[in-house]
Image (tube, rainbow, N blue to C red; front, side, top):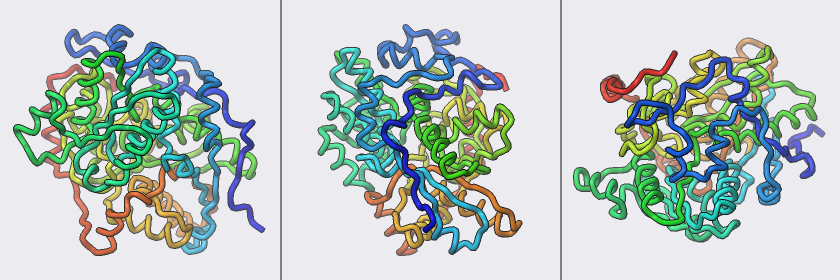
Amino acid sequence: MQTKRIFLDQKDLPRRWYNIQADLPTPLDPPLNPATGKPVGPQDLERVFPMSLIEQEVSQERFIDIPEGVLEKLLLYRPSPLARATALEKVLGTPARIYYKDESVSPAGSHKPNTAIPQAYYNKAFGIKKLTTETGAGQWGSALSLAGALYGLEVKVYMVRVSYEQKPYRRLMMQTWGGKCVPSPSRETQVGRAILEKDPDCPGSLGIAISEAIEEAVTTPDTRYSLGSLLNHVILHQTIIGLEAQKQLEIAGEKADVVIGCVGGGSNFAGLTFPFVRDKIFGKELRVVASEPAACPTLTRAPFAYDFGDTAQMTPLLPMHSLGHSFVPPSIHAGGLRYHGVAPLISRLVLDGLVEPKSYHQLKTYEAGILWARTEGTIPAPETCHAIAAAVEEAKQAREEGKEKVILFNFSGHGLLDLTGYDSYLSNSLTDYSLPEEEIQKALEELAAYPKPGQ
């Protein structure tokens, strides 16, 4: 019988995270204080994050130890299985072997607890009592609410309004774990009230939700902000995915030729791919593909520039591919990918030619998700469908070329709470959307006044 799923013993759980900053061919441009134009220091961030996370954000150490207090919570669901999509391979008639890292097995149904748990741990150890955050599709808000319950922290989540309305059961997950979830823009912050005065029907964006969460964090005692993607320490925590996958492929006697993940801010993509990118940096032949929505094409069409991570310009200026911090993306169902920027680390790797970005329309991604559900059985999240679409494309190319290859992608989350999107697709009411070129030009105008990062 062919092996379908490859498991690691709990004793084989990685005990260190991998920090790609130690191996970058081109160092990152520093985040800048927008008031001075100079690189930010720890003092600029300490009202938002505990010092332990700030240290991880700037660390150049290749590996960073995972605390025992984090490991014991990760053992609730890790190590996650590596599985082979044999039924999909058969339907596609491909000589490719398709493997996927199944992050849907976490209690929150996605990869997000991999960083929610350590962030809650470090904040608790720092004496923080409350965390605020944003969420798009609700996966991150759910994960942080779970982590808050595990460590006894209060959690407040600003959820992008369109997703709040599309995905009510994500909100209920947060509430079940003790998190408080409000639609963003809200009337609970100055940022939210100002936006609603101009546009009462604003669908919201991750940039707006971040602004609201940061505003509450910096104005509330014993409170810090927690981010689910984009930043270096978040990506660091997610590398446990790729480190496990490397061990599992070794057990299977395989070497990845193509490694794929979907990209919004970039945490699940980086979590799987960065350990493999390190191999590529040191000479291994493989391709790394970042799959994003055509409706929010940050890596494929946006400029690389300094920009704010939020709409209200409360964050430092970050060097990244960005559609502009005031960009409000269309209401596609892949809410976790509706973000105007991409992690600086991923942006840097794209510029250096180590990561290959591709964009897909949502109808193509839902087509891939339906194919997956009817072959492999599980229903993927709309975000994950973008990775599946890229994997299917690679498998078809292998069939046309008559070449064997090993395709690995991150199954970043299940779609059991995202069925309204599938309903729209199956009822033929879902449409594609391509971002007009004039929107890109608006971004260029917005970014023109900021410092220019090195290319």
